[in-house]
Length: 344
Image (cartoon, rainbow, N blue to C red; front, side, top):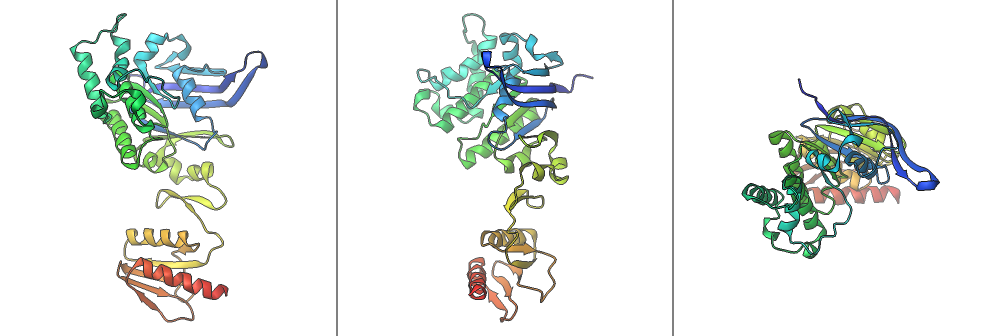
């Protein structure tokens, strides 16, 4: 059976060498594995060291200590040429390629295979065209890179990595500059590369919703808790995700798959809803308005919403007549009014 791990770190210390001033350690004692043929998302708050870790994995920065291996071989033994055939890398560093057209920049991804003179043959050109199409930048092929927006430039860099045809792809916030639709398209593209071509993809992102939807595995990184790796659902359900990123009034809600404001001191409002969709958006409206939605409240113990449909909503408030509402907007206005009356 072949090696199932493409990248392995053992007691790894990452950071920067400062010459005579020594080193700046960002993290130490990190141990992890990047499985073959899976999509892994690296999550962490700003300043957690995600970019430093990716630069270390890509060979741009050397480990300060510990062991780092690529396909079972020490990472430091790879030449630049060997590494470029195994690892495709897209970092957040600014790309200075204004004098190149998009097709020319994407074609640089074929450099590991074109020999000394860099001449593209018919197969290379086909791969370049397919990479641009996959990244949805074919319509920009003749544009200069300097003319592109940050989001368009990011997609071009991803097309370049696709043209490189490496089995392992590392990306630092690849969707950071993209609009909502483009972010979803890009994440689905990376997911297809894993499922259909067996590539191993590691990307850092702040888009937790998409990470939870598509990632096979999560790497969680923070200054306080260090690093924890595991299958996405395991880290969600055992509370690890909330432990890493939850705050006093913000917690991860496993049922909805999102971080939400908890409104710990807000007025409790019960919810009885016909289905999960109605219950979810009722929670959303209550939380947004400073109330605390609950499902275990007994009738008569406090305010309650009974929702059978968009136009069939009862608002029950102790000491007041039950109100029949025909929209979310109507009951939201009414519950605000009641709360204001009680506060005087």
